[in-house]
Each structure stands twice: as structure tokens, then as C-alpha cells.
Image (cartoon, rainbow, N blue to C red; front, side, top):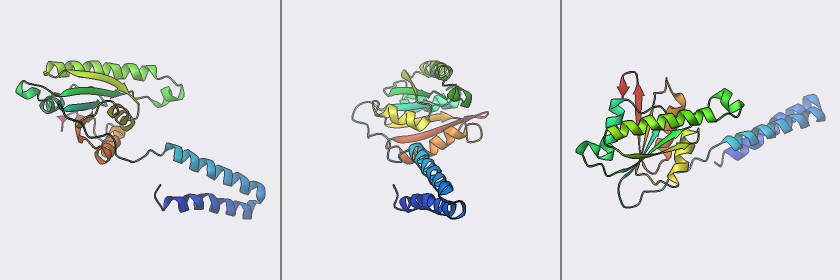
Length: 203
């Protein structure tokens, strides 16, 4: 925790509690203090560690982790992945893993229904792996956590990638993936590329 956060947390509990005690009496003060404490605990639980993600890849073939927030169908995006895998020279030697986060909608999360999200992720994987195979790139596939950054961090524990490629829409069409792209760019030890796919193709 940063040094400035502890005094801020103490103030966030003490100030509202003191004001509530002064104006509302002990009962109100205790209630406000309890609510402030619960809010801070809730925030702390949701706060994600900001350390570096992954470890440097070892010797051997290049390892690429391709994260598909949407289907990998855009020709320019496929060409970029194939180029990085070495398929453009007819001799793809890279180990390629395709990861599809299970994007769970608000209502599905509320109803604890994740099967639809997993089926959607598996469909994205089938299409993405097939299009890469047509471009000369063989790849394995995994479904990951709904949180893109968490999904990447989990997979890098068993697949030490040299480079991570996120394929998604731009900030307007997929703000969650855009936020994940900025965080991955800051925290990954491996190389990182964000391939944006929109109506005009990849960029």
C-alpha cells in the first residue's frame, strides 16, 4: 500500500464518524463508522495488485499469447499474428496459445449463469484457431477468466510468453478491453501489442 493511502483510509473512517457522533449522537456515529469501514474493506478486496505480470520466457521457440476479446477474423489482424509467429516466411516455429476471456454480462453475473459466456468464448476460440490455421499458424486454445488482465496473468503462470497480443475493439466499442490493454502495457514483463479491430479493419 502506498504511504499516503493509510492516512487517507483512517480519515475516511474517522471524519464521517466524528461528524455523525457530533450531530446525530452515539447511535448514528457507530452506524456511520461501521458503514465507512465496510466500504473501505469492499474497496480493498476489489483493488487488484499492481505488480508486474509474468516471468521472462526461457530458451526455445518464441511463445505468443493471443488474447481474443472478439473473434479473430479480420485479415489484417490475422496477418499481424501470422507475421509474429513466422508464418509469413513459410516456416512458423512459434508456440502460439489463443486465450478467450469468458465475457460475462451483468444479468448473467447476477444470475450466476456463466455457461453462456463460456460457450461464447469457446466459439471465439474455434473461429480464431481455424483462421490462424488457414494462415499457416497452429495454435492451442484456452478459455480464461472474464477479467482480461486476470485471464492473462493466470495463463502466464503455465505458458511463459515472449509476447502478448490483445485483439479487441477500440475504446468506443470495447472500453473494458481498452482499459485492459493499457494495464497490460504497463505491467507485463513480456512484450505487448494491442491490435485494434474496428469497421475499417485492424490497426
